[in-house]
Image (cartoon, rainbow, N blue to C red):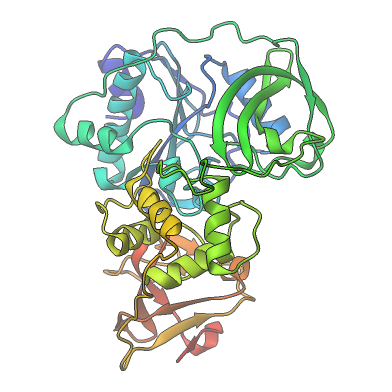
Length: 431
């Protein structure tokens, strides 16, 4: 069975676009796909593939589309790329991901959830992917502040494991998305869309129609605008990236303390930056000096990026339930951090037992570094992902154990426990 036959067997209309979808030239071995990512479009409207491809090309500057599969609000499916094609979807992680997008903005129809369940299960069967590796966009390292996929992935995984379908909640899609009579200019300070992807340079300084507005608590912004030309969507722009935006001094509560609501944002990030003595701008950069300090405090691998391993370590350190996820809209571990910041003490630095422990240091000159399953094989083409030492000025990891000659087990934020080849000839050093 394939995705197409699985859909047809369940009465789902599927449009096979694999021969006509934009780009698709980047290939990989099917065996390298270890995760499935769920996305949403971030707008409560059904969009044709023509509109989506125009958006990807003109707003993101992509040559290949955003997802292997797109699920429309009526449950119809566009199948865009085979498993061996690398699509866009999750920055720095696409080499090992099968990307599926469910159109909508936090609410999805029953027909969509049925199609999602069938397609996801078929992809899991064909690729040998366990449900624990079915993640939402924001669960990947470096994307924790993203709102995508707009659904509780614990509920999604539970439904997949139980053979059930998550109930649909969207009954009123905005079918006619039109300008609301307001225009805004994208400021020169704009770097990323509200959803986390980079804003192309040609968008900067341009004036766009506003198609929708929504309330957010993200970085310095309380509002985001869906901008476009006519009814062609360009992207969600944070108000801080509108030309002429001036940040106001936030006063979270009457007594000047943080609101203990479990929602990360400008005030919480600023308070953490002040606590750790790093530059204060209220923005969660990637990598982030503040996150590096937080990782050092809780005993997580230090790379300046909030990923699953860091979140799990934070949850253990702060004594909250451990699931490796910053729950939306409110997170128990963020609430505990806010409480401790208000008390003026995050806790005592976790001191690791380092007797006889060695570390592997990856040089900043290396753009990428392959990681493998700990069980092997440790050969090119069998990697499960890539580290990016150059992006972080070099990386270092504690060696958990030696698996083979010059092959070591390490624990990373992005991939968990993996194997790495670090012979002297690679430029790596062991200390």
